[in-house]
Length: 55
Image (tube, rainbow, N blue to C red; front, side, top):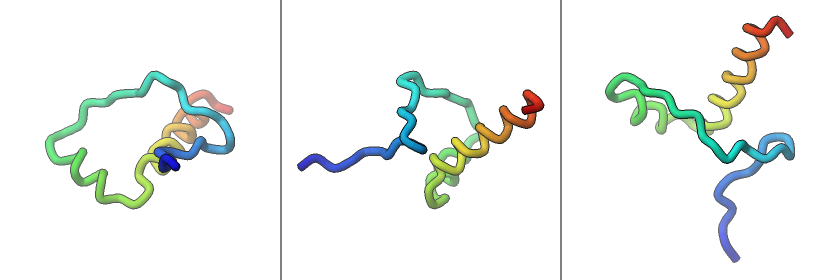
């Protein structure tokens, strides 16, 4: 049985096109040391969009 690579957030499938951001040297490696960094970053992006849109 294949292993699950990712779990959709709240039963919503992720967009097939990733968002890519250039970061300063060393950030990528440090980010990977944070537990559950992908989900935390997704949640932060959602909050940022909500705050900026005034919703």
